[in-house]
Length: 198
Image 1 (tube, rainbow, N blue to C red):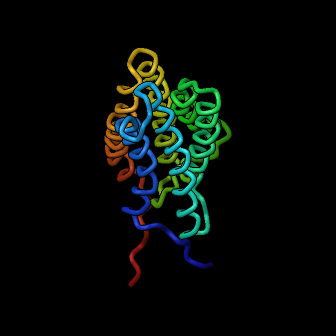
Image 2 (cartoon, one colour):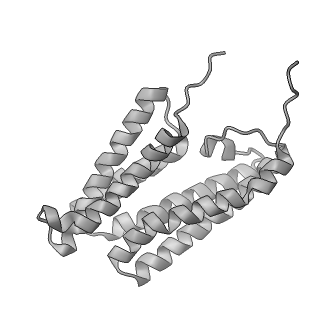
């Protein structure tokens, strides 16, 4: 069995966050490139689509595989970003996080229902847990994804576009990191310890 190629953690992070950062920059500074203030979101969306496709291409070129989560998210970015540009309606790009997070939550709950822990595949995990550990972690992540979907709905429907873009970049990511770190005790408790080789 050949070793699976894995991206260095910093490069993986850059490929996942890079398109989001460009989305923020495009929205914040689009007027400097000739876009009217109410058109900046469309410039940012176009940049987001292109950057997402490039990031997926680089990831595939380096590992010869595509992780499930970025692929699903990328497809939704292209479809809903495309609708945003084609119809000149920013609602579609704002719905993207709601749809992606709800989809991930439903997939994880579906896996639990059929007794198949899908979290390891979805999150491209590198650790090994007991069956109980995967079950508990999967349920927590499913509920978290639903919470993110609800938060996105509240923010985009009650705040300005600029606030929503900023929150998408500077709110959702810290929340996700904090939630992931909060799972450390569960991971340590249910981690399968490998026997040390002598």
